[in-house]
Amino acid sequence: MTVSAASSSTATTSSTSSSSDTSRTTLSSTDFLQLLVSELQNQDPLNATSVTDFINQMTSYANYTSQQSLNSSMTSLAGSFSSLVTLNSVNYIGHTVEAKSDTAVLSNGSATFGYSLSSAASNVSISIKDSSGSTVWTGTGTGNKGANSITWDGTDSSGNQLSDGGQYTISVTATDSAGTSVLNYTTVTGTVTGIDTSTSTPSLTVGGVPVSASNIIGVTS
Image 1 (cartoon, rainbow, N blue to C red):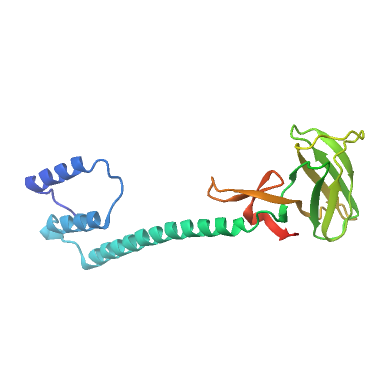
Image 2 (image 1 turned 90 degrees about the vertical axis):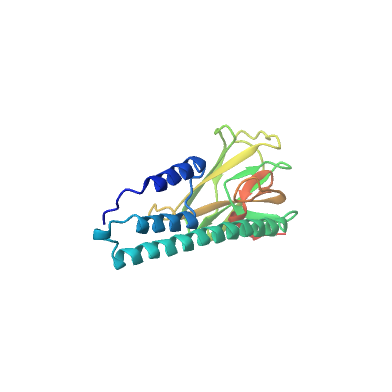
């Protein structure tokens, strides 16, 4: 299809419209229809738009309008979902929970960690590091299939009691008799003391450490 040049009056109108709408960067349904009508008005009579092309353009308009409506609905749904997650998270405050994580704060001289195994392990090695990445304790753990736990007493490998308030990270290596890793994930257990909604995904403060609400796998008390 060949489109001839628009008349001078049309060009003047287009230029005025363009200069007044320079700040707008999105295409509205009205803009789409105006472009379509302008095309029909200024097409070459000897090479007019075919019925098929016209239908295809109208279909594009219908799809565009539907997409705009869908985007608006999804934005509204996302906002409602976020509010729902926040409201549900409030119910965790004051409860002791278990969550997928590897970091806990030493409190009252101890920190409780856990780990899940896909099958029984013949060898389980555990190391705990401080916030600077230095290993402060190493040991072994149980190798039962499923959930296992360890309560660290807060002492380093030399027997020195570490101060409360520090964040410590657990690392677990669990292998079966063939040397294949059977570790699923590690967990921490602590009391939920608050909620952080400053990001798109609300997080809970579990024992002083932020944990995504989606990582909560159980409430123990």
